[in-house]
Length: 223
Length: 223
Image (cartoon, rainbow over all chains, first blue to last red; front, side, top):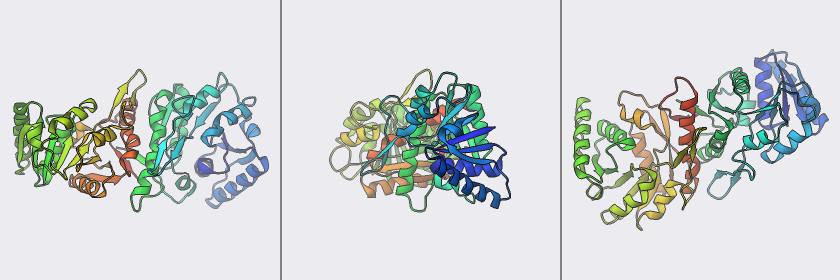
């Protein structure tokens, strides 16, 4: 499978590239608005992956070029870049491609972090679902993972990622991709209409990390 | 310590009475709008607790009588009964008492369960905080526990409960009471202003249970 990680030079994209790079044989395309920056990140990831004895195909490209031919496109961009990023790759998104939305809109105040509903929909996942061309399915996943922990290959995961989607086949594909990462379990949370509660878990994780000694880079496990 | 469980004839109140009854020597007062119903529930709980070889003090009374002299008062009532229940016991709430709010406002639609913000505040915990008399602290806790699993003494917990409160001493007291239940870990989530994300976890837990085979009476663990 070919997976494009748009905005994949950092945040959750880096961790997904490294984890899939060492654990699978998917072709990975790291995308960025700056193709050179993407190429440098891809070279870094290849080096880290090679140190683990794996031999992954990781290329860097502009977001549009990374999207070309991708079966799955992960939007590893800030929530307010989601629509612009989709628009910038709309011409190269293949019919039948799956777009994965991990972004969460949050606001911080003096008390902590709070879910900050997007203006146009209940969740960032729903914003993405409205923005994609016909024939492209959106699946929400990877919202609640610590980017730092995911990108630290020695850090065990042992946590869950929630998957929401209106297209059952697309959601199952993304759940399967998630479970190809060692220590990650995919749990389903229903259709995209249920994404707000999934995304709202992320500010809660930050509030818990802030308010408890020794709890950092938290994930969640449903038991 | 004397703990009143208002609306304690069912839901989360039953499980808390049984778990504290077998594991601690706190005096437990089960409250109900119907004192006779409370007395019957208390007798049932005593029997269940005695079968475990414990000898707890569990009495049943009207909500107001159960509140008399209580150090901690748990509002085990539906979210839209929270204010009326507080008003009905305001005269017997001791100065310095701690009121614990575990209720969550949810609505169900065709997709799943969703957090249903109360009209007057961001969370039910905040609604309770506004309704209590001066000198009484409100702490949010026990929002995300399965009532069924809590009331099933043979069911292992191994889950977390989130604690929010503006009064640090009161929050610490409730966290300590929570951890006196075997298998339950209290994690802090900051002030009551952060309660919405805590309460929003409950509809998510139900959506996860609905959408995954073999996942029932779910709790959550931060790892």
